[in-house]
Length: 199
Image (tube, rainbow, N blue to C red; front, side):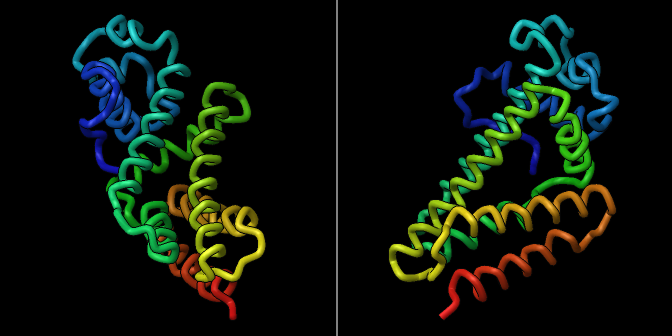
């Protein structure tokens, strides 16, 4: 993802904090990121951040929500309603349109690893994942209704695609497999054509 930009219902100060959090994650990783490192990126004191977010967990949950909003905005920029093209767009956004650096994806993997121990982070990751799966399921169901896809269980198909996405992101971030995302995009394409569009 690129550094967060404007065009959000959050205040300008909150947007600046989101941008600072992004930079701190890229520069320090999740394990070494503190409210102080975020404040240094923000150019203000930690008290200025605590005005909006009581704890680091609150801030990270808000940041994950912010990322989901940005993803939704990018998906909604496309005007096509054709199910196959819309599904292709979603998969491109999830896998090949990464707009950013590997350091950020590593930091996100580190943060996800904390989810079993951190209620706020886990709940926001669950919301993000559930919404993305909902988007996939909705476009697959629309395609099934219009005869583009022959799948009987859109929810199962959406979950299968999510497994491809999550596996690829994990391999890319943890094993430095540079081609993991592109290969996963090809695997997703093959799944769509051989399973969802099976004659």
